[in-house]
Structures are given as C-alpha cells and as structure tokens.
Image 1: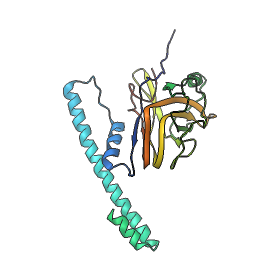
Image 2: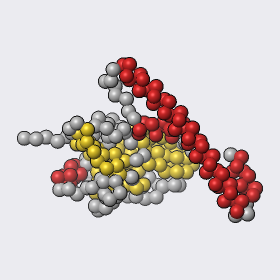
Image 3: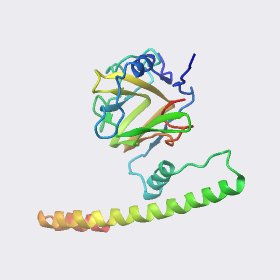
Image 4: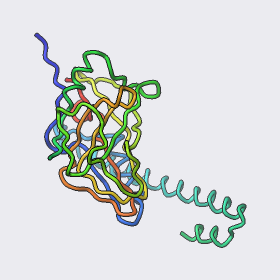
Length: 97
Length: 142
C-alpha cells in the first residue's frame, strides 16, 4: 500500500504584502525576489546558516540597486515619450520624481 | 461562513485522472481570485464562483492569471510553484483566495487563508508564494 501526502497546513502559507497610497520600494521588492531565489534551512549548521543569511542580505542590496537603476532608466523612457507627445511640463514632473 | 485553508479534495481526485498540467508556457492556465471574509471556501470547494469575491478599484472578477513554474522534485517530494502576483493601484480588502484551473472548467486547486483581512488602499496588493522547495512549495506531493 502506498500513501501520497498532498495536504497543506492550516496556518497561512502565502505572505500578503500591501501598500497604502504608494507602490513597493525597490528594497521591499528585492526582499521578495531574494526569498524566491534562495532559502536557508533552519536545520543547517549554524556557521553555514549565518553565512547563507549574510549572502542573502548582500543579494538583497544588489537586487535593490539594479531595481533603482531600472526605475531610473524607465523614467528616462517615459520622459522622452511625454516630450514626444508634446507634454514637456509633465515630462519634467516625471523626471523630478 | 469561513475560509479554511486546504487542498481541495476534488483536486486530489483530479491529480489521479491527469486533469491538471502545471507546465510553464504550455500547461493549463491557473488563476487566483480573492474573497472576503463572508466567503465559504474549504476542502469541499470544487470550482471558482463569484460568490463573495472581492470587488474594488483595480480588481477584476476572476482574479489574476498566475505564471506556472514547471513541476520538479527534490528527494522524494515533487512540487510546483507560481510567480508572485500583484494587483496594482488597488483599493481592496481580502481574507483569502482560491487558486483554480481556468483551462479545466475553473476547477478548484487550493484554498488560501490569509489569517486576517488584508487591505490595500490605492496601492499594491501582492501574494508572495512560499519558497519553491520540497519543504515549503505551495503544492507538494510527498
């Protein structure tokens, strides 16, 4: 006889993140990104666990940095699209964000 | 009325009949719909319904389409995952969610309980799925 377990725990298994009148910051998104990229086992050797957590913190900083770069670059794209659409004042407002 | 987190029993049956295909790109289309605390969702839920589904700015009935992650295995456990999903610029309150297969007559897969009401106000509402590994992935067969 074989048994297959496909049950889920009663505790919440997804995390819900919400914002109030703003979007997520690069740091908040980077944290979720790194959670998806790597996990640290609670049963790992303490030294390895600490090293892995340190690496994870460094990864968060790198991902957040490149997210800010992407946002800045996208603003440049939006700025030029608005200028091309004859909206220089709106373009300047976007550039100043 | 309550939302009780569970893997839907009908989904377990459908696993044995090969109903669902979680393959990224070529598999079925899975969606996640949000529900208020007035909804009744549990292991007996068999399909998506609009009853007590969330309404509000930035939310469309039926919910968001999920991005599948092709199933894999680690050790003796097989698992699959979905990419996190976000409702942007949304003003909504939800207590739970239902993942369902819109390719297969909206067949229910899993009921999610958020533990409490979660609200976004003119902001983002994101579901972050657990780490995709043999111990934590959203759908695991051990």
